[in-house]
Amino acid sequence: DYLQNVDWSRTQAYGLGLSGLYINREGRETVGVVSPSEARWLADEIIRGLLRVVDPKTGKPAIAAVHRREEVYGDSGYLEIGPDLIIEYAKGVRSSDDSAAGRVPEEMFSDNTSEWSGDHIMDHEAVPGVLFSNRPLRRSARSLRDMGAALLAEFGIEGFPPQQD
Image (cartoon, rainbow, N blue to C red; front, side):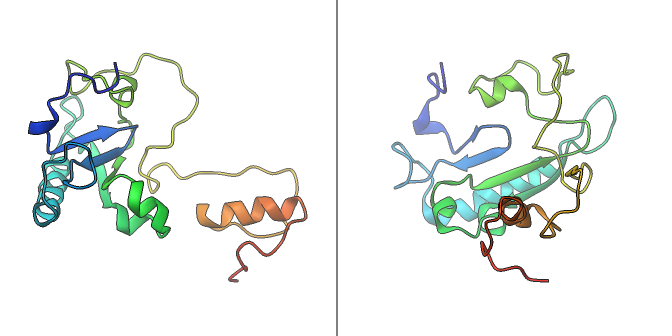
């Protein structure tokens, strides 16, 4: 069922996963319709539109921020395949499971009645992550970018990447 009923010849952008938006680019997607010269303008329009979305129940913004992939990913592999835009949902708002599975829900907003224990699509400023440990870490992890190296150090593997204290 995944994105099967999409008229790609008329689709300029699409969502994939919980917080990624892709521009349907000529030369990248099989049936891409947005030229490279139009892609930046379209991304700007999408960002402006998303930042105006308001949760009708609370009257508060539903989207905290929208980032371009080049602002988020430094690795050229992700720059090639990563989403063009990454959404940070405001506290209390998230993408639906239906949307993540390629279905289009009838309502833009709905209550989440399913039980889940955590999420990774929120605005990191509103919902910061926490690492609990029963002992001091051998290597500090001040941000998520430092987490991999800190966890490797716990297993005696050092030098990935060099620490910048």
